[in-house]
Length: 253
Image (cartoon, rainbow, N blue to C red; front, top):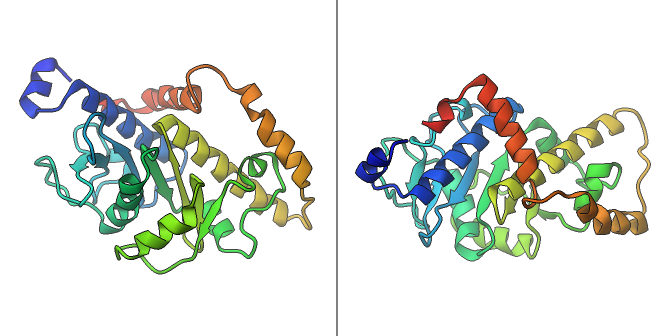
């Protein structure tokens, strides 16, 4: 976007960068098969603007999201731009409570993937039966299903059940993750999704072999040794954006 257009729209360079990053993320999710018609949500705080965050326009598929059509709202759900699209009440209710109360919840992702919903719908939830699941054992919160998330009072229970965790399985509902950056939230979602997919595959074959608490602890301790510079998830997310660009670059507009 040209500087003149930025000035005309009143969008700062920092906000435009955030818009492009979030729009790219929606396209990455769609490429990975994590779209759910026009539903589900990824939100991102606007840098330098207390309480303002970006959310997808309700009515558009993830593949249609662009930097320019993201909706900017405040913590109370008021639009802060002239975007003609509405905001999904379920998305606002769920995400706003975390953005309001958790200073480190810069980006929040919620999906209804088949694997995420399936594992969240069985007794015991995620089990320590595979590499990726071990990332989350002891680090994953659970929240019982209360119906579509449109009532503000449910937010209190969401915060209580999340506690000091930053990944949650919403029982009978799906995946919820958050991060200090969008790439960090992305890699959490990717790993939790993979953990759920592999658990489903394993359970279909018979009784799974569960990994001991001692080995899980060693695994979590040593994960940092296989990270690369740039912060959690950055290289992974950048690689996915390059793949998206080979398909369609319209998210940049």
